[in-house]
Amino acid sequence: MSWCSSFRGSKFRHVFGKPATREHSYDGVPITHSVHDNHYCSANPCFIAVVTECTAGGGFLVLPIHHTGRVVPQHPRVCGHRGRVLDVKWNPFDDYSIASCSEDCTVKIWDIPAFGLQQNLTKARKTLVGHSRRVAIIEWHPTAQNLLLSSAYDYKV
Image (cartoon, rainbow, N blue to C red; front, side, top):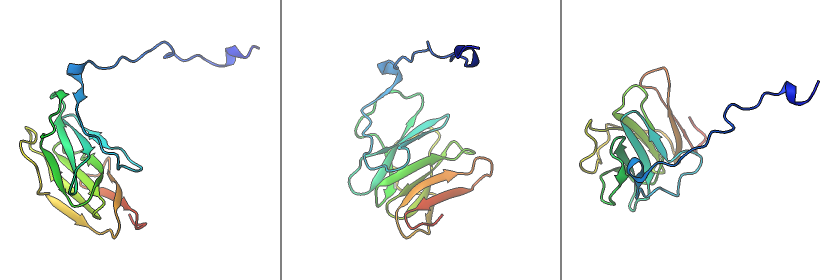
């Protein structure tokens, strides 16, 4: 019995990726450098949310999926936190609801208009306060509606 006969080769060994063209990608997005243990973006069937570098607090961009190309620096943001935003997650049951957590010890839930942001969004639907140190990670429950988990540097969930 030979060594090669007991292992099957990969079906994908000759598959190569191709980068998207400029008209099918996003350009000019100021991505944050302050995200620690989590992702700096989140996507759903309608929008992409990207945590950005901001002065005076934290914010993130919400870009429609079909709106590709160059993102202008003055693009409207979701900017209601007093500290840097560390994580964003879309609600799996509502494509127009997103949660964000920040270094200001809060978790905020935002309602995004169906046509996207036309101006800066500073008023959250709900602000959740319960942590004494920065909130690092948030996650929506995949099968139970309106259940959100947050974890912070105060060792509490």
